[in-house]
Length: 513
Image (cartoon, rainbow, N blue to C red; front, side, top):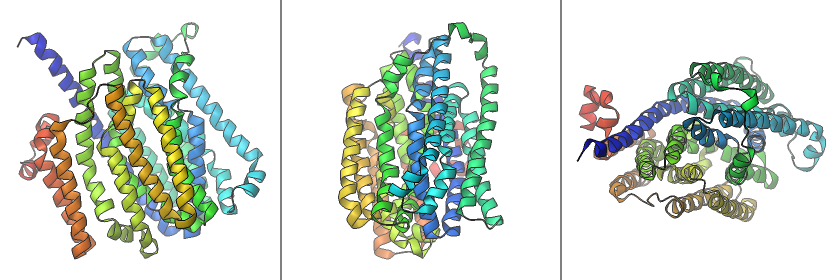
């Protein structure tokens, strides 16, 4: 085999290694971020009354709806189009995309917040029964445009600076500010309204810091030398043709993550909202690895797509998928197999009935994560029509399920509807990979990984049901099983190739072999 044949394979391997190593740095940042956010969540749940926390959770659900509207799906234009224009050196379109996205998001976000203020009376009288939730919304509604801008900045950092800047910006400073707001609440002996104001001030401070960092990063890359107002070309047709149909993707997650809380509050009470919202962030921890790897996956896949490197994208996809499945496993077994003791340990006996909610949501979120970046890949390939169709199906299924289940079963009904919809939606996305991109529906060489994971989770769940050991013994067993899974799959994960410096540590070699 000649050097010309070896070089492409080496290059593809190098790209996958670079992307996974960078994503692993982001993963460590995600764990740091989620750890801080997790502590913040527990402090809030334990400090506030159940009714106050339910009102806060309801208000934040409305904010999530507003954020989806303000973003208008344009965050996807950053990570898909900007890398392609950068790769092709089409700087006029690159700057046109950035200008269009930023101005649109800011205008929509501020306009939506002002409209809420103008019509707060009719909205409060017609839709929201809890007046505390209305009061909180008057403060938190401005989080919608701020968080939308934050998402755009994340995409820009991922494209232009790489993993280190994203690590500090997204996973250290932001969560630290949120934790600071909660500590200020407790030290001042404030109420939930004080907390809402502190969160808003923290979000404004974060945006100011991020803006300074981003301008500095663009200057370091000498991008401003290519900027000329007279040559700026805003590719609005190309961007809107891609992003507007994909608003249905936002609609899916808004319906599953926000509408359920709104419907529970309408049919039941804020206490029932709290039963769901208290454990939902814990269940979403199963997507830490998925989202961490997605930040760098999309630009990398977009650049391969621009070069028509289909084989490279397939390898990148499945190497990412098994890393996500294995790295997410410890979180999955803690929140699924050990849902009952973990719920009581974290949130107290008053939330004991939320354990089944945590288990069902954790299963669906992990199922969504373990098969990899199927949704992002479909969007990179521009399979907009298929994505729209399956998104509409998911929204309709979830709405019908919630309307049937929530009035009778409350938070548990919402959980069943959301979990089943997540699984269905992910299966449809996976099927679309084969039909629309040429990526293998399943990579059979990695079957071993998924079989071992399934057996490990089942054994821990069975042990919990039959023996009911203490939570500390169960956590110890979960850690042990997780290490065994990594050891058994170390060759498929290529630990030595991905992290040679890690494998030089004596205790790592002793554990993993």
